Image (cartoon, rainbow over all chains, first blue to last red; front, side, top):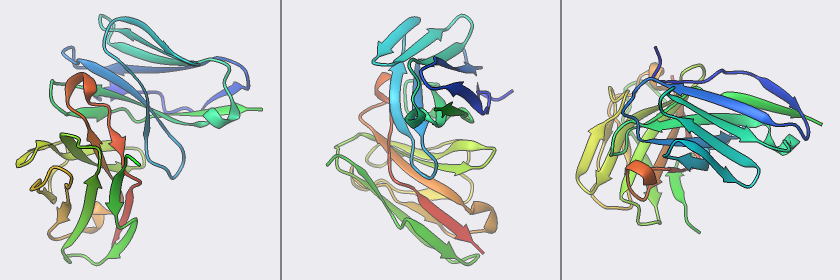
Amino acid sequence: QKEVEQNSGPLSVPEGAIASLNCTYSDRVSQSFFWYRQYSGKSPELIMSIYSNGDKEDGRFTAQLNKASQYVSLLIRDSQPSDSATYLCAVNRNAGNMLTFGGGTRLMVKP
Amino acid sequence: EAQVTQNPRYLITVTGKKLTVTCSQNMNHEYMSWYRQDPGLGLRQIYYSMNVEVTDKGDVPEGYKVSRKEKRNFPLILESPSPNQTSLYFCASSFSGGRNSGYTFGSGTRLTVV
């Protein structure tokens, strides 16, 4: 079992819809969780981080964490074609700097 | 501008010829890390450093060396590159670990070993 798992997609949503991206992780002691966006040929950029169970909102983005189910999700409201990218889930497995990434989900937002 | 700078952006080399990929950050970050990204395998951590002279192996350290003599620099060294090290490499830095370990990534180095 991979430590951080994501559906590779592509996930296709129409413009203006809510895109829901999911991630599961295997290590129960994981502390911190991150969502990155990566455009084709570019480097990953940090969108959001979340540490506590529940929801965290930042503009059109909402991260959700459920530690009991070992599940992290990212909701993108009012999806735009410019949101088309690969979304990477990352998990910090210790108090240091071991950040493990999932394989990413490719999102396509169609006009 | 706050950034992580990697050089070179593209590199083609031959098997066995030692090479160094440089990485520098201007944000006074404690933590730095190297990743490689391969199709179907995603981003995998090679080495990371929590401070000057403190480095540790990530998930795929074989065939790589790093050093952290100064806080801002974290070069990646391939002593004897092989074709299976052909990949896209990213350097990244963060202010600290744990909750603040959200990385800022460099632009990447595309390495081809023939």
